[in-house]
Length: 139
Image (tube, rainbow, N blue to C red; front, side, top):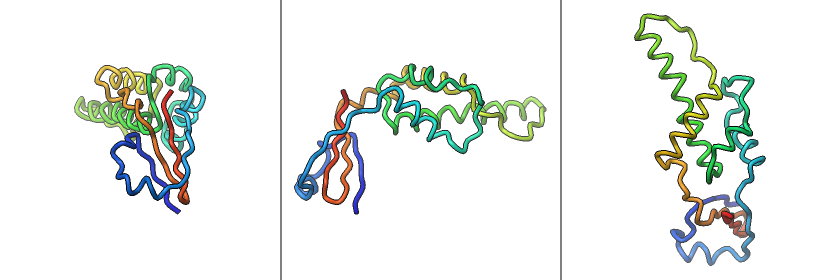
């Protein structure tokens, strides 16, 4: 069994594509799907209980799973920065604070401004399984 994915199928070698006899299109995640993806990404992390995932998703422009993961990683730096700043200021924090709504909002807004969550979704996403190609087309 082979499982792979890409947002740039035009970069794939034609010989690989010929090995896959069928193609199925899969759409980009909707807002509800994105909220669920965020919950999966953040499962097992220390997060505030009052995070409004629907609001966070509303900040996403063209976010697919990998974009959401990247922005969550960026958001995770905010508690680390606060921890280090507290230490620098002479405070002795024992643990990192939980990831907050504000951390996620700042990360998504910064990503949009710096085009980290860029409209790179304009291509296709391909995964293949047992000789069947799955194409995820952005809409």
